[in-house]
Length: 437
Image (tube, helix red, strand yellow):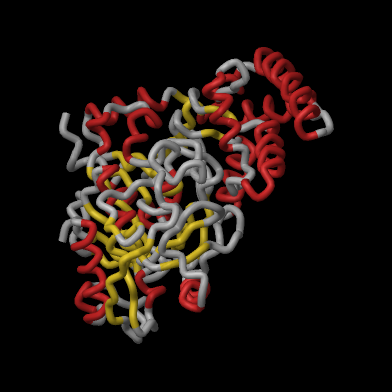
């Protein structure tokens, strides 16, 4: 069944932090379902609605729209502690959260306390070679998923007797392992059993066979939005390994992570910032460790939603974004935070790389050491643009910048973000159902 014009997938095309929350919130207004298909509480999506700021980590961004059913798919590593904190916080702010608008896959993996201990201990043992994780236990949880014998899934939370046995068996293995590797004190196993049995009771009404629910929705053409976490250049297979996350975060990860056929991916919107940022270690060819980078950081408030860490900032890397757009088969782009670039005399876009004076033909995430960026320089603009609501409202230099991005990536820019609020969006060359001009 053709779902190209019904479903939509939103993925980041850089190193994460592209502002997916705002775009997902906007697009969820024309969808019945919003589905997280990858990652865990290491993803931070920020949404501004009516002057209110919501920082979400596990709960899909469609939760702020009453008519949307939000789904945490089987490809997510689910942290009940953080999820319950988010649910309670949303309820305190008047947002309804329950089985009527939030479903959690019974097949999703559960992040346990030992995963966070392992994450912290492993990073500490690596010294200067550390990867720069968020210490949320994401990687160790995915590792146990592959190991299987030491994994706990959401379905296990619903059977207290079996859950207790599993926790005691696995915790014994982890305690002995951590004592040897990190000289860790043993975990309070009975406290963990009690805590996670309690989460099972609290969340039971929301646990479901979400894949089956979504496949039924596809059969009757109910529109689904698949919400990616992190960014394509952090993909475990296709990113700048080993400085990546632990899941498939491109559109390639949707079928496995949500339990739907590949044809359900629909129209892919690739989200990019008007510049480039990265958190933690790893290559970033266009990084500007100078006044320009600092200016972008301060104007864009570039500090991690999840960790608060300052982000590395630099010019827009069209060569890397083109690779990521091709990988996910992006149909169009959403260009976020264009307003951050206001005030620069000139702007630069990386159009390609050179190594030892020779042009690099194809982006290779495994071979970024020593690359030299080839830049195109464009004129900047002085005026603030946060009040613009039509493309024609932008200064000519800003319009030329958008057109340069379209030309270099080979995709139309469907949406342009000019501020944090839900309304601060220009609908441009999109073909998303419900938003076509």
